[in-house]
Image (tube, rainbow, N blue to C red):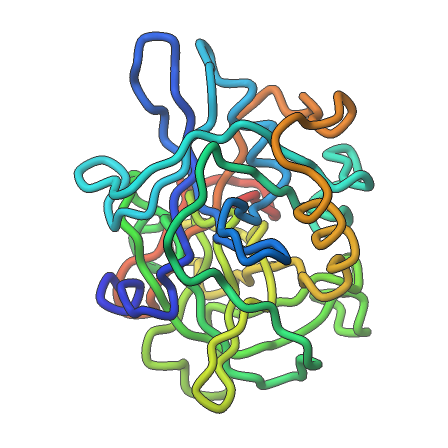
Length: 295
């Protein structure tokens, strides 16, 4: 839902794309602004596989981040990315949901925007959560439609954790959390979402006592991801709490030049990015026969 995404609590969520040699900007996904210890909002947290995606684009020159509500028509205030840091344990070969799919990007200039606030509590089953990102639209009936670059938001509840004994989530690492698109045995939330192409790197949020916190970064969709079968899908997000030492160390000790080993060209084909889908509205990603999909 577009109006949901424009709420102040989702202001730190922006789009992450790339500049090409011919001056065009290729389509991107999402990232979330954060601040270092000095309070400077010159960093964003995103999904590691987006770094691979951008670096493998033909004619790629430099990544760019923007805060506008429409990637194509209203990109908003933008910054160039002058450095990126992929989590040192990330490996595309490890498979979706089994690797720390996190990366940090640094900007040439800071933003004058309130950054996301990290959650320091413990998530539990049934916790209400929300998300905002730039995923493609769609519905259960249509499947994912064409990427339009519009920022949308949605709501859901925590359904499972990686390796928690549930057969649906058993194959995944314990630092992944899952929300289902459809609740077969209970009513869906009012703005039920499913991640889709373009939502990778977007934020998963929890609101408590009037404060909205960043709890995770959306990474992939698990399920058939076909028109008519979208209700059988779950969105997988990587929790940020287990990686705060790496995040804090990186944003408080680095400024611009990344170590050579921090960027990996592992994916030669474009990943499927997440976007959220509203249950009775539009959701995302192109029809695909694969069970898991990067957002």
